[in-house]
Amino acid sequence: MEIKVIQNELSKIDCDVIVAGLFEQQQELSGPAAELDNALGGIISQYVIEKDKFEAKFGQTYILQTYGKIAASKVLLVGLGKQEEVDIAKLRELGAKIAKKCDTALKAKIVCLTPYGKGLEGISLYDAVKTVVHGALIGAYKFDRYLAEKTPSIEVFEIVENNNPQEAENGAKAGQITGEAVNITRDLINEPASVVTPEYLAETALQIEGLETKVMDEDEVGEMGMDAFLAVSYGSAEEPKFIHMKYTPEGTPSKKIAIIGKGLTFDSGGLDLKPPKSMRNMKTDMSGAAAVIGIMSKIRELKPNVEVHALIAATENMPGCAAYKPGDIIRALNGKTIEVDNTDAEGRLTLADAIAYAAKLDVDEIIDIATLTGACIVALGEEAAGIMGNNQELIDNLIKAGEKGAERFWQLPLYPEHATAIKSPVADIKNTGSTTGGGAMTAAAFLKEFTDNKNWAHIDIAGPAYLEKEMRGTPKGASGFTVASLIEYLMAQ
Image (cartoon, rainbow, N blue to C red; front, top):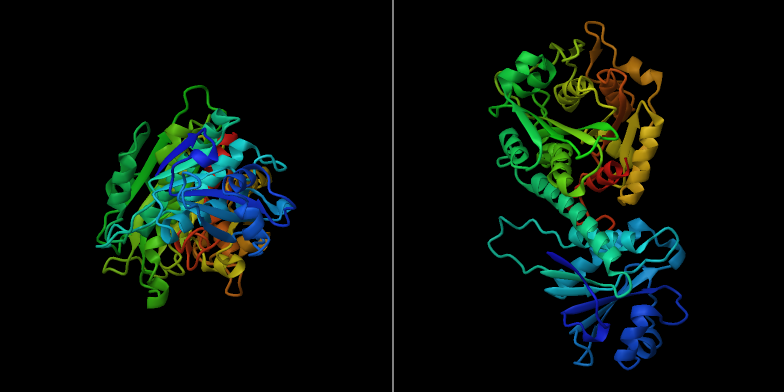
């Protein structure tokens, strides 16, 4: 989709659909809606609002044929809801809903939109344009490469801004970068596991220009002492890959940050085999790794003033003849021994070695992203990710970045009892916790053992990474969750 910022009178813009927003309980039309109403002979105020009682509730739409009165073929009126309730998350959701409506229902190729939300408390023109463009790319996304018949898509998305076109241009560019990073992530997650193997993730990382990227094979990983990661891989015919991408800013970095994505390209559960229903979407167990690749694919365009180390321990978890077994004791990179209590608690084993590796890189912060626990889905559903860690300032800043990126993080506690729950009588720790609940926290307590007291945050995206139904404008399927928030966080440093 091409994103353009243009300057013109609304009545003269030649496009398939021109979009204008109206607030609920708006006493009289103003701005773009008033301009279009005048050009259309008062049809919006006299017919749509007075006769048809269009209330402009959030997400409500009304389609008008223009019959040649203006250059655009159709006008799409969109309800913005109550003015005092509009925020960044709602702006992104509206952008997604508008794009989907114009794409699927109206079959539009050229869509023109006037920025809505600008000037409201805390929302600049830059933020309004950035957010709606980000949302539009989310809403117009399709994963259709395996379909024989593909439906046409929006080709051009225009933003009309006559007063401050440069600020709008900057916002549109930022929104496009974020939206494209999210969609790169979604493509990786939506692909079948027969395509996205550890080797595929490694090759994808190597193709990103402008980074220092190293991929370590099974022998190199073994020589380093990443036996926890390797143990998970033994049951699979796919060779594991450890991926290290490094971005260096042009000037002196303000901070060094490691971001780690869980990279299980398929998780059968291993010898503790999952039931078929639970295994169905386990191609998505690399959503954290996909998010990391999505971010790094655009980081040269973003140009944050931080040094970023992006790490992925990529493997499958399969029940092959060499698979690791319940009761095995393995040693992680930092020397700690782990009793394998359940082979389906494998993600934390791969992350343990990745976090221990990051701790040796002299970074200031470590952030891991993982579809780690079903317990987090039970706690928070698909509506939010759980966030935990050992540094409150880091957690608070990530939550704020989530608000800017229109993603929800909810902090869960890490109590001393969670650390006690992972103690083992035969090893330093075990890879499961209590049988009475708190699984998201005991998993985080396990990861904390490998941080070497570095500032660390763990984001459990098991719920929002892959949606079973549309959620706040994001269609069913892979969501690309955390990409927008991590971009906001990196850019704020």
